[in-house]
Image 1: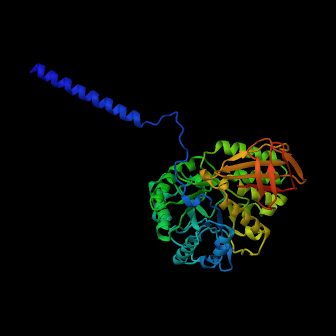
Image 2: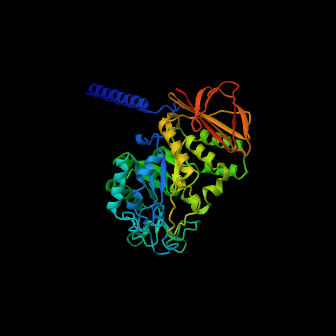
Image 3: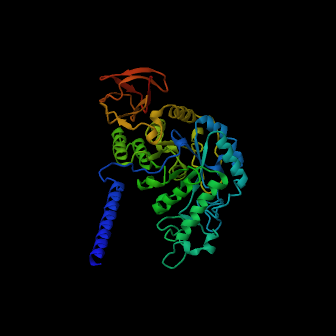
Length: 466
């Protein structure tokens, strides 16, 4: 009996060791090798965003009526312009308590699951989305998850979802002069679930294609990570964060703002930097940013126009070249309502202030650039497009130059950030080859010693001859 028991015990130990060994092997085979590189961006961009452009829609100021239906009449024009994604500024009812101005801020949301009656009805919104889809465009909604209006019903039904000041009262987001809103508390699971379900509601109910998240970095990243996962279970969405941080790109957002590019170009326009400052910007931005994380490039948006004067005031003679750079550099170009009509006034933010529509050279410039972006894979977004390759030149304080290449497509872009004509030769070989300049249609070949002369505040975008 003792031997029999010992034999059974040995068998048992052997089996245990065998299972332990097998488990260890299994764990070893599934463990990620820490020395193997892995993509930082784990999310999948929707395929339709590969060469997309984006347009910010200010419904209130867009037309005399200020409605979805009135805006819808502009869709054929925007399609012809080359717009792919329509970003609608917040479409929800606006709070009345502590409202700023006569009409209030779009960003003081009174009801997350309703439509601002000034803009129309839910059916009107659905019709707008369907018309856009039928024309091959996509629609994302501006989403204000960080705070609500003072008179949002959630203040009564769920006051625990809000942060409180030192007296235990509702408060605006601390340190900001946002007196018309109060701050949510994302340490409360309830607000996370409510907000996620509200995001899903509009995808299911109105078939919208994603969101632009207001002050996205004020909210825990893990909230956005989960929200993106749940939204993608309904359909592939596109997410834009009003923020500038790597971590948001990993699982939650396709695109964040290129604030620093705007500010660099503005500094050059004001004489605080020269062309070498633009080179230095990209040296930092492109080295620090993960592959396949899309940046949104712009010279104007509602914040800049509302609080920092017009694009003409900010960029002066540098405006056109700055526009060309924002479309040809890595990233997705943004066009704000009215830019294509040469918007030369600050639109009132809390009142009605209709955009005056007219044909303008700025619109023609964007249309031409958007056409190039759609056709030339070197200028596509994320990993679909080509990386910016620096092309150092002999005149770096005045001239900035780079190339992008993908598959059989290549673009070589040269910018003169000075008020005098500048000549440069280029110390690289990526630009060698035969080209047609996109705007002038001039044919030019670049070799080891080829020079180029650029007009004051000028630009040339050379497209490789296939």
